[in-house]
Image (cartoon, rainbow, N blue to C red; front, top):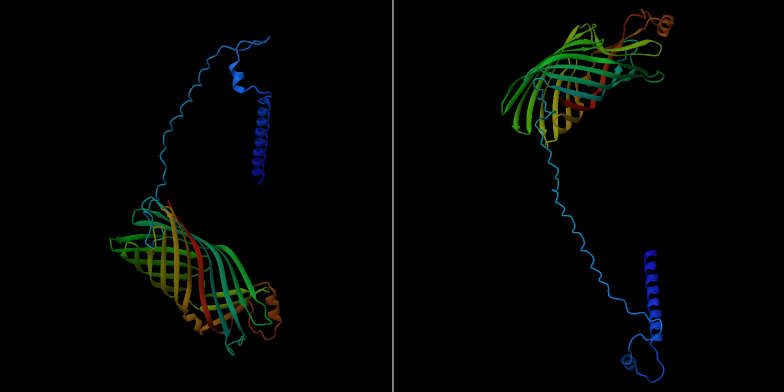
Length: 395
């Protein structure tokens, strides 16, 4: 609005100036008397009065030079962004392994949980009639590194760091016991061999050794066979056989209370080794050049219980050297939910309040430093779950 007002003021001032000039011109051309204006012009004979200067000679003023021509600008071609080249490799493919002299890295960052409820059967021991719950959870970082020896054979190394929390809940007035542990939980190495591939079929096999700290040493055979329904879809089956060599004569879940009392649920007793077998089927599908989906159904026999679980993962791959994935796995059914041939044991850590309390208790007739059966346990609502992200690098 201010600009408009300025323009209107300028128009009014200019109009007033024109009017004033017109009034002055009229005043200069008014004559009195009866002499007509054209007669005055006819009688004019030039400048005759004193001081009149002769008219100046005309001076030729050359016209201004023409403006310089505008420089001709050369038209520049418009640069168009080149379309992205499609990936030639699919890093998330379950049969992918590095070519000779190349390295594949899979970093797995996740959270896992195992939980169930337990009831100590009344009359089966000193703790009969008590019930509670177990929950173990961990945040972990796991690194799998594969180095291609040939295009078909690669060396595989693995290491896992875990930050774990274990919790055993008891009915009131007993307190909930919690333990925490952070350490290298697993390491291992092995070989993988892609022994067959054509336009329809693909297969690989591997042998691995892994060590779980303070728990077991494991020898694993793994195999996978896939059929390519289309260039974008592969269905496959797999099997894993593990021989588990336990460090002790039993294995299970245990926790230590604040006063040094151990509660230990033994899944298997008087055992030095176990066989674990997993088998399943899956389908891997490329949704687009950058996005892919992997679905699995898994059945596992883990010596003392059987489990059916499902796994789903989605991957994004923006280039031939990097992919990122999100996955989840959960048990659907587990026979441990009805297990009742399990026992719970207890003893005291040396030099703790637990030893003092048990020695002062007349009902304790056993050595508090030795494991003693506290009753027979039945389990319910057994569940495993795992969520995580994968970062895949290929170089």
